Length: 213
Image 1: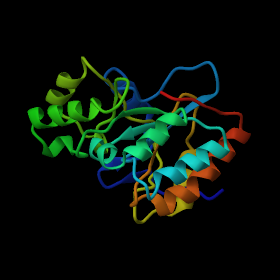
Image 2: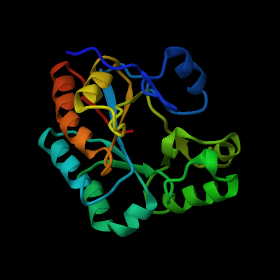
Image 3: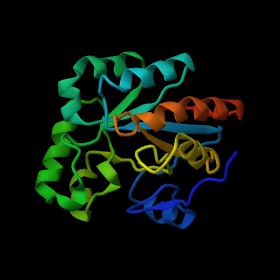
């Protein structure tokens, strides 16, 4: 396997260092303690008809369940795709209604947008787009939601990444209990759809169990 690229990219850390995990775990779900060799596959930004059904096919063929953090606007536009996610037994969470950047949005607008999206999904999972959320937004949402970040970003949304870079980022860093992020978006699709089956097959061979959040 090739050596992966540098972990840090502008504005993002793909693999959270242990000291960052230690600090953030008091505020966010970024890793789950588990006795089993379990990992948690998640997808952001869908559902959309151009990508999400293909992701579901890959998961269905491998008998894998995942968690989809859905943009409310996409649920409204593509309700049939969202219903397919639910009917195939996957978990869902809110990803705001308009995919807002918390650092660029005032607290009230952001909170209202997140709650609007949450009305469309079952459960109380919420992931802030880009992982960006202010302290005010956090305090407003934390009483009602389990706010989920991640252990590993695959990097599938990065234009200068290849599918192999995404594969390496996940496989060279994975540990039991990790939460992995891919994106069922048009932007990420060229890399994600090539990397996803390789990652799943390799991790299954290594004895990992895929569970939902």
